[in-house]
Image (tube, rainbow, N blue to C red; front, side, top):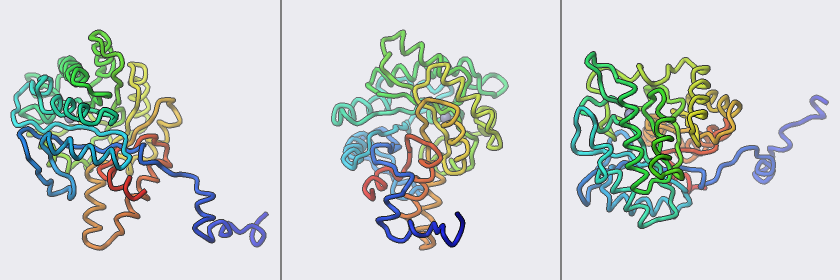
Length: 323
Ligand SMILES: [Zn+2]
């Protein structure tokens, strides 16, 4: 039946009717809050391009993680911003490194909060690339993979529930899985950054994590924004290598990738609303050009509608409060 018998506006008439037929919702316990940890004590360093987000020393991080958890958010994703860096990024697998100490402190204070750790080298290498460089200045895949496995082990030892390799090296999920199993960490899950695109939307993060590469860019290892079949191949390989959860990053510009991976894989799909997505909403809201709360909830709903099961967002805490 067509108009005038069929009138779709009938079900849009009131808020109660709209709620009754709403197709997509999300819960606070599907949100993950990314956090940045620095060494030292009693440090709170605002990040200019990400208003409301700070680099925190462990005492403040533990406090903030507790608040995030109280709001109903289930998990935090920890990024380390160490003071010292070297060519090989050795600080990344130091058992007394900033992430390892942070995980121990968080699990101690909030045992139910899921601790996910970023496994990468870019914040730990003097050159800022996600792996070690060969003599030609290219990231050496296979040596990097060995180091990534070492990092994952040190995080698991500290008590991380999940490790999240974000480097985009070939074969790293398999190497991390077998190393974890060999060393008695078969319970530690792997969240694989499967479709991590070489995106312009990471700009503010690089300020936050002080991880901009000194030379060159990351297009030699991250996905080309124009490709989607390649994302499916990456996801399949990560699944075969033992990933527990697949991730798409960024989120809003890549809804088609989220939808495609949701349809081609049975694994849970996480989507990462990145720093640039956060910064754009913040900046527009600060200028009075956009309604912040509505824009955030609409974006997260859209990411969920595309098929993401897990929503990683700098707005996680606030969104949980708004829900
Ligand atoms: Zn990296």
